[in-house]
Image (cartoon, rainbow, N blue to C red; front, side, top):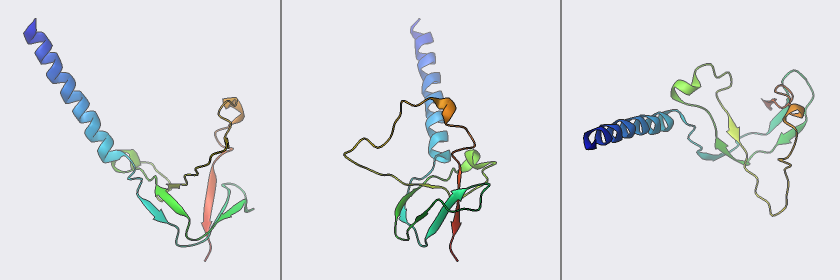
Length: 111
């Protein structure tokens, strides 16, 4: 019985170790940086500009790496983290109203 538990423990450690290694290789770096240029944000299929992100804004790298990057169509992805003491986001919203293609935006860099 002890031998079975020992072998099972080793196998689980190997599985968890490989999973950790895979995550470490494929996850975004989440490295912090600042925007070098003003960026105009709009819908993918539209020509209108919704808003502009100013030069100097702090962002975090969200680009996938390794195997996770296969098929990634926009390699330079970043996230903007906003902190506030106020309740800014409604998380109790019906997911059907968050259509898959209604929330994607495209960034155009001003030249």
